[in-house]
Length: 476
Image (tube, rainbow, N blue to C red; front, side):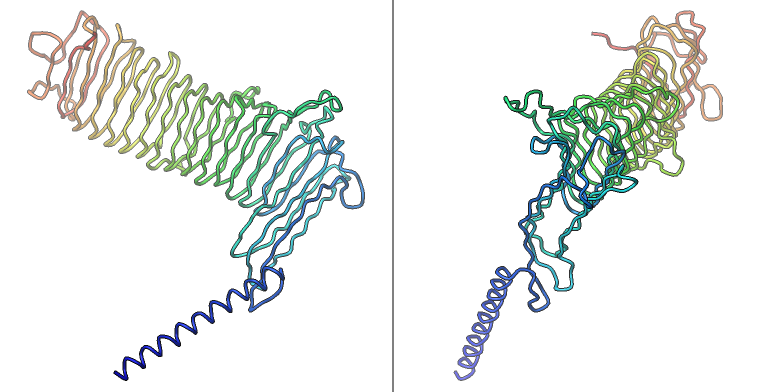
């Protein structure tokens, strides 16, 4: 009985002690909230309410955007917006800070900024240092680069360099600015030719009120990039460097004169890239990510021996040009349609390769991956060690030769009844095959090797020790 009373008394004291600790903690929090930046038990609460538009750089010189060759914006977590604005007559910088949170007493919670010229007033520098806290209630810090909507001037002659860590970057206005009697002819379209963005995360967004002609776009980020623009016309290069970012574009069109070098460089590694259309010479570095493009006009190459594909997934709806993937490895590749003059060279290991409508030429080689091709034109060569080969050759003639090699995989070949050719089938020792694993359904007579069909002179060559089915296309 006495033991029970002792235990109950101890529990009561423990509960009271816990209440006292919680109450003390709440008192400390209240003191912190009402005394920002005060050191209490090694911690501090910080809070800002700042909004300022700057039209003069350090030293008193007005911000005159017309004369600038570069604008550099450096920060950490702040958002950045480059927009047309009706509140400035020429140009300006607006900085807002409504950040709040907790930090250790030793942490730098100061907020400061610099807006200054360099290089004989031809370069404008915008630097913002944000407070550093371990618990952030509000991260709302934004840097606005303001281009007057009252002038025809834009940023087409100025290179924009943006460096931050995880803040978002918005280029252009969301909506068209409304005209009124005092501001007739107001412009909401912003023109930027050279844009360089380097960041770790966060969003990059090309908004709708933006001129679609660019010279260079360079983006290095593991965040996301989206474009509201229907078309981005590019006169020099689009370069994307990322390890795991997500990219959404509509139509990127190279309009320059350099037809021999890469115009669109996608170092997306393990990222996700989606586009409706890419026109130009595309250099691709993709390991385990996803690439989906509705329409490729030009070349797409992944020829880097160091940065090879692993188990990427690639889907192209329409290829009008050349594709070269010599290091496809385990990547699954699907091409819906290849145009008349297009060509594809793919060398993989265990990835599956599908071409649903081949009107050009294809050279495919895998180790154990399966290959499916529905051809409507020209020649092809398919090799695999243990993968299956499934071919529908819906063509009236053979230009040079069809070649299909598989050491042990199954080969299923379907042809038109009027196709003229010479069929020859070899085993892995280059000897003619005549065995029960060859299922020949083109005509009633027994298969003989080689066999002339419809008085043909062009060859269909098959080399395999696996099962072979050769039949007619079913045309409904």
